[in-house]
Image 1 (tube, rainbow, N blue to C red):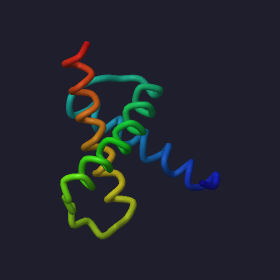
Image 2 (tube, helix red, strand yellow):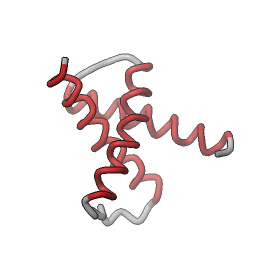
Image 3 (cartoon, rainbow, N blue to C red):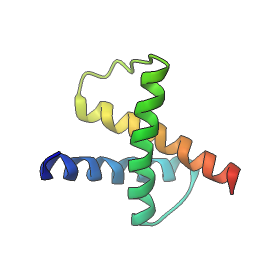
Length: 82
């Protein structure tokens, strides 16, 4: 990965983490980044595993929605475990 791809992924992580915290609660920039990055991995894995296509043709929007779905799952699982 080059620096631009990493910066884009961190940016998507921040936005996805913020959206997830807005939907299910939470706060803090570092938490947004960690939740968003973990969410992008979880969301991408789960959507791929179950063969779910969101139908979003814009790559950035698709990444953002996938990461937000994963981040919400990560936050909810953390609350269940914790």
